[in-house]
Image 1 (tube, helix red, strand yellow):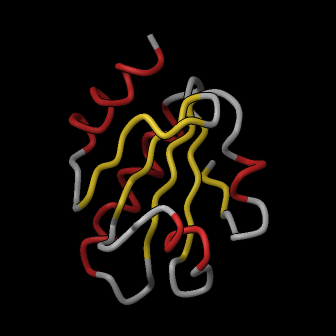
Image 2: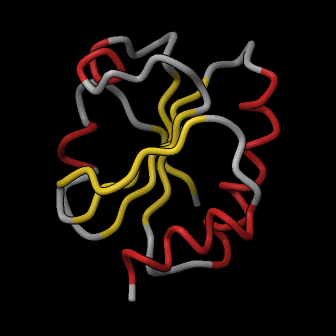
Length: 103
């Protein structure tokens, strides 16, 4: 399951464990390609919390984190940003990146 985050709950929801946040927008073509990849990984992996944030409805957090392009995938471990991936990322590559922070 992928949780929808807002400016109000982002810090609370991403402070524990390994959390991937997909920053996206409804009009973004590459985001529409990335979303099913994130959904598939969320079904397969219990060691990572998967979240998403609509940058049009939530401007504060993306701005404060310097998200300039979407999709941007942000990985936090215990509240600290450990990785940032901009642009479409295939499932195998994304899973490999997540492995670095869960093993």
